[in-house]
Image (cartoon, rainbow, N blue to C red; front, side, top):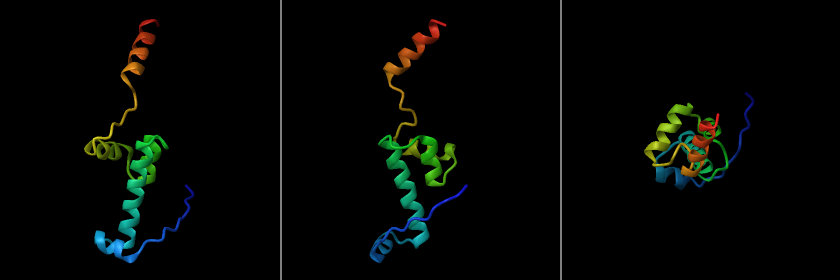
Length: 88
């Protein structure tokens, strides 16, 4: 898969604040960008996991630890699905 490299300017004191090397901070930025984009329905769970560099299962476990639902299915959606299945 082809990838692109993006540059993000960060003050060196940010790295000191987090006590991280540039690559560690870059990975963390990707992770939190992925979590945020998923939370705000900008990308799917699978795409967010890919962006974060996680296997989907591991990303789901992380979301669970953060109390972020891995399913966006509402009760109303579930009831509609059940009714649809009953009518088959």
